[in-house]
Amino acid sequence: MVGSGGREHALALRLLASESVGEVVVTPGNAGMRMAPQRFAPKVLRSVAGNPVEVAVHEAVDLVVIGPEVPLCAGLADELAARGLTVFGPTRAAAQLEGSKAFMKDFAVRHGIRTARHEVVRASGELEQAVQRFGEAPVVKADGLCAGKGVVVAESASEALDAARGMLSGEAFGDAGKTLVLEERVEGAELSLHALSDGERFVLLPAAQDHKRLLDGDRGPNTGGMGTHAPAPLATPELVERARREIFEPALRGMAAEGNPFRGALFAGLMVTPARELVLLEFNVRFGDPETQVMLATIDGDLGDALDGAARGALDPAALAPAARHAVCIVLAAHGYPEKPRTGDAISGLDAAEALEDVSVLHAGTAVSGDAIVTAGGRVLGVRASAPTLTDARERAYAAVGRIQFDGVQFRRDIAARAFGEILS
Ligand code: AMP
Ligand code: GLY
Image (tube, rainbow, N blue to C red; front, side, top):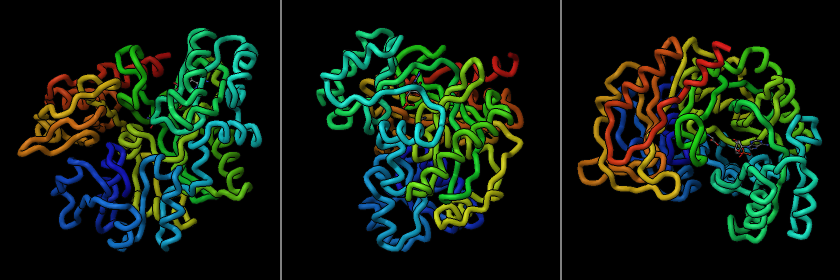
């Protein structure tokens, strides 16, 4: 497993729990993954530093699972495959679906996938006229990877212009911003839907909702994600069926037809409009974080078999099935996140939180310092609980959060609250 976040911690634990898996090696891993969980003994989870290709070859692993988008877009799957390894994660060419927003938008148009109207801008001379062609202020997106910061949902044309100029000049995001996508703003509720695919067949995972703003009530700055719940009540079976037909089928067929079959996790960021239309906002070529934490707690089946099958081009679509459970994950972030996260705050209460039934504390930005676990990044921990009902999962997750302390901790108190509105409405 390549990566070091909460997503990888959740994947590693679920893989250890899979009958098909004997051992998990994570590179580089994090402090949480270095605390070997006893409940899986004699199976072990190890963290190893080093170049991922060399680690995989040296450890003679049967399967490599790549977590984050940066190595995928840089071609790590291709490099590993060239060394004879079996890889869950798309090739560099297929990873363009996330690595270039202009590629993704053109691809969606080519294959009849509904997405917001857009224009690609490459030169500042074209900018003003392009912005004017949108009725309201367009959303401004840097073409390349920007660690989740490359999108500005502007409130006015002048704000959009300022953001766009900062990107085009290279000041904001370097080369990643020198090509822009302007797109129509879409209103609605956001949904995260994931498919595991072997390039041809695919299986959908339970729909999740993320909470991207820092503060309760969707206020404050955008973050990598402050919490999730699954399955999302917004995603009725009928809506999921439409997403399958209108988005995943054409996308996976289109990638294969263009010579880039997609093997890995395809994550569609969707907007469900008030008229209940589905608009594709983005594709990611990997599991979402913190969506993965809740999706894995709401499926039954052997994850090792599913990922291995997808990697080998022989996915059994029945390998994973929805479980009769609900999960909520609450992110605990460091003081100063997202602008300037403070590090080095000692964390207590981890064992007490995990002593609660069906609670897992998934590490992201943590480190070991002497005898203590300390904060070492923006999103520090994901506290996940599962239960037969969403109400119970949510209560349990907040009870666990109440047992964990560190100075300056930030978390939202309304994770999954909107789901209850959706149940009622
Ligand atoms: P993206 O990385 O493209 O998903 O954009 C990040 C976030 O910006 C999304 O999760 C949405 O909250 C918001 N966003 C992106 N595109 C649009 C759009 N066309 N209309 C409204 N909000 C958007
Ligand atoms: N939680 C959103 C993402 O992983 O991109």
